Image (cartoon, rainbow over all chains, first blue to last red):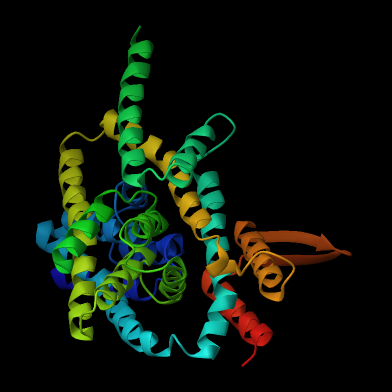
Length: 180
Length: 206
């Protein structure tokens, strides 16, 4: 089981490019169809949890599936599998890239790429907003967070902590209303 | 000691990352570029580009790369930088993984805790603002060129708008043009980054 967890997440980690949600179909095939570790419903629940918890989505999935299947050893095996190839590739690139950085051609290529990176991040905000059902009613929340971090230079850590607290209190209060 | 500082910084980044890989990229930028000045904004933009193009979760890739660069810039040898990158990767995984195990255990016993669901639902929305701030902090002379009617700035704006529109469009977009069924699918980030690199190469010269 430990070996299977490592191999499955090794595959998932290696073939995820561009990060995030591109890997969901591959995960589903490995975890639900091939290994039958979880059924469709349990997989959807795990996904929601992995997305909502702190940390990187792929690593969170590896942790929860690994732990459910084989305890903490399973979690360690799945995480190691998921990050092994990416870390080695990035390391090789980092060592190689620092030599080529001052090359004029490489600089020209990156002059084209940099605005594209900014656009990718900005577009992802909109796509995630659609998925999280952000509308006129609650759009002020991310806007306030944006202004606090961008204009006032407040650390995102504080914004997240306060938001978590507000979410907790608000949830408790609205439940009291319901109870009445 | 840079290694202790690196470890603690990435522990903190790990536990406060919400909203997946790009949420982590936003926090890494805040710590590594804005607060500690371990690298410049344009160096960091390059690291994001490389992280998006290579296999693996973007957050982990960026942490590995940023750990390497931070130690190298502090004046250490490359082998020490390799150690730094591994340290950053482990640190960034450690706390969220531990927390995940605790929550899975907790939920196995109490299957529907509403406090947890409420907090997570709130964070999913708020974190979008944090990620947007990462994008805005990257809009500067280093990434777009100096503002004005010059070649680099105009081209940067053009690349920005095209990549943005191609990424916010629906995954599959079916439309009718002159009676023909046309089906467009959203290009992957890798395709867009490679294409922008080619544009840069053609526009600014070999």
